[in-house]
Image 1 (cartoon, rainbow, N blue to C red):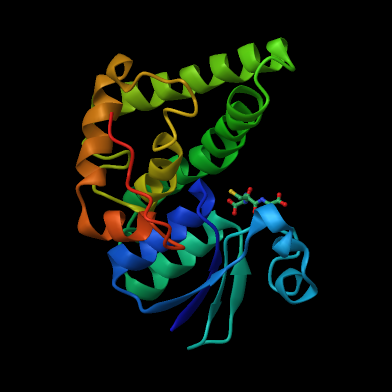
Image 2: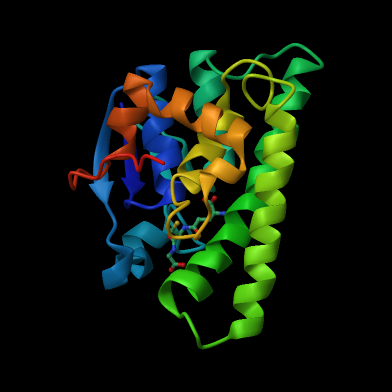
Length: 209
Ligand SMILES: N[C@@H](CCC(=O)N[C@@H](CS)C(=O)NCC(=O)O)C(=O)O
């Protein structure tokens, strides 16, 4: 049993989607980041950076924060969605790190400036939208060659998907990125992805382009 500390955000959804797709039993502990619950001492003991997601694996006692690390841990535990042979293993890592270092931080800034604080900082809006569109372009070019970012469906796709699911917040027209749209619709159709998207349960359906 995995204890999942999460909230309904892209980084949280990565882990609930992975747990559903991997068929691992888990218990959801909601951490309402709008109410500063991420600063509670007992949460900081497992997530010292005061961010969701975090897990405790009750089978092993290990606790982890940082969604990329958690995805690798769960993939290694189940042997799913992360091939361990080279070069496939490194192709997955490459695109997972691309998400962690680029897609998450940059699209997070788009949400901050464009969705929540429109008009306050025009230069920041322009800068992060430009970078966001550049990242969509990189993904579209990659998905012109392969079905999923690292070949087969993997933890790299699981990490990227919930960020693309916020395309409306990002004012991105998915029709401008036809390969991303094809990939997005294929992943959105997976049962585990549908279940994992609405965690903690609020009735949130996956946005459709
Ligand atoms: N690099 C971290 C980022 C996690 C993150 O930014 N979590 C956000 C929600 S998506 C959060 O908990 N924010 C609360 C805060 O910053 O206080 C990861 O991938 O796990």
